[in-house]
Length: 186
Image (cartoon, rainbow, N blue to C red; front, side, top):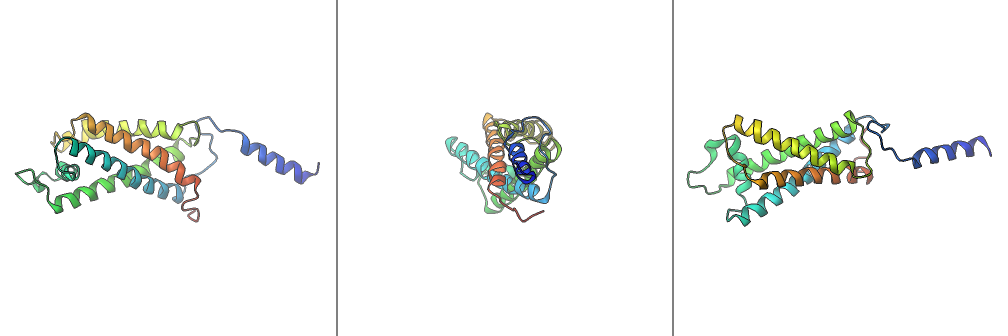
């Protein structure tokens, strides 16, 4: 066997070995990873928003009520006294919702691939996404919302919507990464 053949076999064997330990990825956090996190955050935000809209409909509220509530949590004075939904409030709620989704998606990739350097096999991304979403929910529910003096989202659907967000992040980030999205970013 030539030296070249041995090198090719060695590389193939190294690629075939599953990486299962925390910190076993040989990668550095790049702008591509952060961009993938932002796009994954948008996708997860869409999934979470859809769940929130379905829950709103099931509870006899407007389909746009979740976005009114997001805006109202940060800017209570924007809410109408009669509880109706205005376009301005919904647009502000959507902007806040997706800005947070993008930031949380980027933070997820920074933690996942930059800090922990986890692998993308054996359900690790989905599991971490779910755990991440519960942490986000706890911070929102017990720190952020009380800080703003709002009792919005004390319902179980708020937990479920966050779980959908986290699982969606755990699915989308590795999927987009494996498909070569933003491959040209360094």
